Amino acid sequence: MDLKQLKALVTIAETANMTRAADVLNIVQPALSRQIRMLEDELGAILFERGRQGMILNEEGKTFLEYARRILHEVEKAKAEIRPSSGAVSGIVNVGLLPSTSDLLSSMLLRQLQQQYPQIRITITAGYAGHLQEWLEVGEIDVALLYSAKLSASLNVQPLVEEKLWFVGLPGNGLRSGKPVTLDSMADRPIILPSRPHGLRILVDQVSQENNLQLNVVAETNSMSVQKRLVLDGHGYTILPSIAIAQELAQGCLEAAPLTNAGLTRTIVMARSRDRNMTMSVKCVMQTLSGCISASIEQGGWAHAKWIAKE
Picture 1 (cartoon, one colour):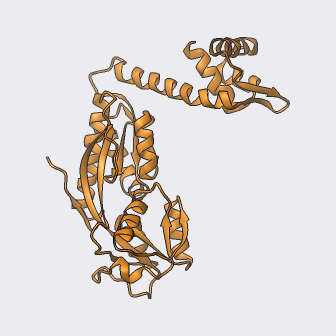
Picture 2 (cartoon, helix red, strand yellow; picture 1 turned 90 degrees about the vertical axis):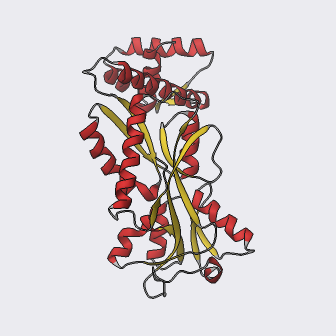
Picture 3 (cartoon, helix red, strand yellow; picture 1 turned 45 degrees about the vertical axis):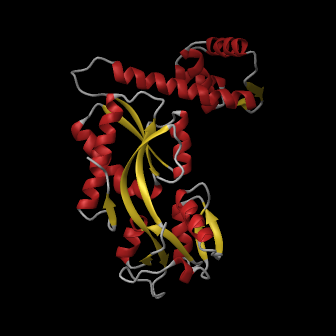
């Protein structure tokens, strides 16, 4: 098994056509077919269904595709790390950001890296904390922002930010930033919440259970934009950190009040896998990301957040 065979597999899977894949790889079709046959012979399994609709991965092929992509990506990262340069830090780093933080941090992070470490290339993935943790543990991303609740012992974490959760609704519902509310007083209102394994949902469920509350959850979603859209369209209220609704609050299309219940505070940590070597490029990205978060809080871009990182 070699990298050419893995590239052949990935390219055919993406194009679903042997001829197009051969063109992309700039090789003749018989050579491409031979690479796939050799790969299937070594694995002892057929990977593609060959039919009128082209080359379609079967279940075995779909399983192996994920490993092939990961191997090719790791090789590219290794090349970027060890390729001779003028002494500048280089490499490919995959960064995971929570949906509520991605708009604030992604552009700032890229700008700072381009200025300080122009030979580092980043891939930014936005996802809920549960998914980001899974991707960290299997090596698909290098560093991520997560919530501190229920973190795996396989992760190395550094607490960075502490912030309250807010009860959010349309204007005219009496929600004010200077008038905190309790979850108890809002429990009977129609509430739209993120679905598990979102860290915010886990926090809300824990506090509800501890206080014997039965929330009136009318909808669940795995998309923060849908979560806010349903509130904007009048379907109910939601619970979010202030950073997630900063723009809507400034525009006056939403109102919110901080929740005072113990436990309805989230701590955001920076995490990486203990099982993977921390390259210089990953270290530089982590330091830069931490600096971006600290600056955002200091400059007021991340309102109502508290910087808790230990120097």
